[in-house]
Length: 467
Ligand SMILES: Cc1cc2nc3c(=O)[nH]c(=O)nc-3n(C[C@H](O)[C@H](O)[C@H](O)COP(=O)(O)OP(=O)(O)OC[C@H]3O[C@@H](n4cnc5c(N)ncnc54)[C@H](O)[C@@H]3O)c2cc1C
Image (cartoon, rainbow, N blue to C red; front, side, top):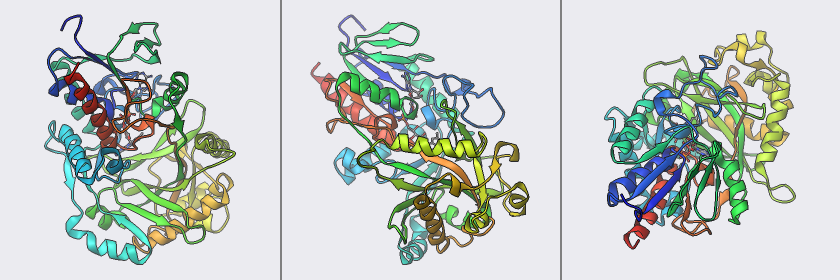
C-alpha cells in the first residue's frame, strides 16, 4: 500500500459491513485499504455482564447484544432467510429475481464457508398442505429456505469471518464509535480521533445507529423518508403446537389481512423450543424478543405477531408513535414487559400471577422479569383487534395457537429506520458515500442486510476499476 492507494471506510461490522468488506478484500487489488469501524467488541468478547439473562441492557455501553463484530446478528438465533421477499424487497434492490437469488446465494455462502453445520430447512417438499390450509383462510404462507446458525454457534462463525478478513488485510477499529462524517470524507470518533479521508465510505450502522444515521443524513443534505412501524406481541405456546409447522419451516412466515380492518398482520422470528428475552432501551422503555439455541431447548415455542402501522400527516414519525406506546406499556408493567393469558385478554380482564400459573405454558422469561397485566390498556383498540383476529385466523392453520393458555408478551415493537435516499447502487446524493443494511431502512434481516452490503461493495469495486 502506498500514499495513492485507494481506501474504503466502512462504518458497522454487522452483516452488511462484513459482506462488503469480504467482497472488496477478495475481489480487488492488494493495494486497496479497507478500514472497518465498529462501536462494539469482537464476537467472542461480546458478553452482557449485567445479568446471566440474554437481554439488552442499559448497563453495557454500547449494548453488547446490538454492537460489535457481526452486529445484531451475532447473538440472534442466526436464522438465515434465503428468500427475496423476506427481510426487504430484494428483487427491487437488485433489479431482478435472478439477481436477487444470486446475491442471496453469495451471502449464504459467506456463512456456510465457515461452518458446514448450519442446518438447512427446505419447506419445498411439504409446503402444499400448509399452503392449501392457509390459503383457505385467506392467509399467505411463504415457503422459504432457511438456515439456522443458533445463538450458540453464531459467535464462532462470525469470529472466523472476522479472523479471515484480518488475514486478508482488512483493518478493524473496534470499540470505536464514529460520531461524524464530513463532506471531505473524514471521520471523527467519540474519542476525538480523526480517520480518512477515504475515497469511498459505506455507512451500515444497523438499528443501533439508525437515529445517528438519519441525523447525519439531514446534516449532509441527504433526503430521507419515514417507514412503517410493526407493533404487536410475542406469542408463546407449548412447543408441540408448533412442531409440525416448524418441522416444515424453522421460522414460518404467515401474512394475514385481518377480518374487521383488513390490516396487515404477520408472524416473525419464530423460535421453536426457544426463549423469550427482555430488551431494555436507553430511554427506559422495555420490550421483548426471542431466540433459540442449537443445543439448549425449552418446552415452548415463541414468535412475534406484528400489526403494521403506516402513518401519514400530521404524524409521519412512526418511531415516535411506537415509543409513546412503549412508554405506556413500560409504565403499566412497572418497568417490566406485560404478560397476559389469551383467555384473560379475551375476557377483558388483567392476568394475575395466579391466573398465569393456571396456563399450561410456563413463561420462558422468568416470573421476576415480567408483570402479569392487561395489554389492552397499553395498546390502541385497533391494534388489539388486529392481533386477536390475526391469532384466531392463524389458529385455523396451526390449531392450538390461539388456545386459552397462550401467553402474550408486550411490548414487541419493530422500529423502522428512516429510509435513506439512494440510487440503484445505494450511493447517496453525496458522491462516493454509500449506505447499507437495517440502519438505512433498506433491510430487516441478516441476509437482506448482507445483500445491500454486497450491492454497495460491487458498485465501489466497479468505480475502483477506473480509479
Ligand atoms: C434479538 C435479535 C434477534 C434477531 N434474529 C434474527 C434472525 O434470526 N434472523 C435474521 O435474519 N435477523 C435477525 N435479527 C435482525 C438482524 O440481526 C439484523 O437485521 C441484521 O443484523 C442487520 O445487519 P446490519 O449490518 O444492517 O446491522 P447490524 O447487524 O445491527 O450491525 C450494525 C453495526 O454497526 C455498529 N455501529 C452503529 N453505529 C455505529 C457508529 N456510529 N460507529 C461505529 N459503529 C457503529 C454497531 O455496533 C453494529 O455492530 C435479529 C435481531 C435481534 C436484535
